[in-house]
Length: 394
Image (cartoon, rainbow, N blue to C red):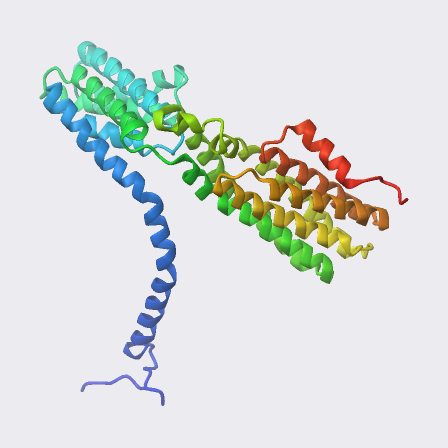
């Protein structure tokens, strides 16, 4: 006898079966639609790398096969893609590591095959010694991986492919060189675009959490301030991306002749801003942490204190906008000095211990933003002192 699943009044089976399928599919469609813009942004961000990698692979094969006639030049396009797949801003280093790793693997593999022959235990010994030697030479993970992989290829292919060692080394050299030519000459990165794409999340994170902290001070909402602090502390991804992009900008302006003129302009200033922006993040974290304590302990909050924190958030946004446009960040500096002036007024009106720390961190963060904008540290400190005004009321 065939049994049918009992259904509820709305048609859904009691065991949660077929009647739930349309709802689950609808949720999946909604989730996919919501994530589509983010996926498209990631595709646009990675599109340039994909084109560079494709061009480098094809060009490396052509140079190795048609021009240099390297036997089985498979390693040339592989090396080109491996070098390009390095973190943007570390391609020169990755290419050097690629060549060093291949050299170590070829040397150790060829020597041991000559001494002990080939086989299972010989292959294991070749890989172990290749990695050990690369470590002794001071190589990082990339060198170790390349040395080990090359040793495997030498140990397994040498018995059936004669004279593999030098072609493998030459192909790796060709691939690494082609990857640098592609990134430096044929399809160079636009350094300002690269670093702006990475700096935007970091600066927006800082500005948003400062705004949240300012609003929390106005409403004496310690939980909101704590939430801002927790989010600001979770900044490793944003700061890491900014640091990597700063390295990429420096690399692009050093390698590409068409970018040499921008080394001392907006790109250079933007690249140098990564470290002071990181400091501004940490000092703002101290500011918000003390804001939490200030609220919890019921200290006085002069009206100009949250206004000063809001002005600091606005200065951060203006800095991002002016950097992205390649303009001198004069508006950001003016708004940051306004934040310091407001903090000075709050201090002279009267604050408690934690309030005085918040005031001090407004000053310190402003100094960090000034340095990020290209002002020397001594000049930034002087401007902050002047804007703050006297410590005692007139």
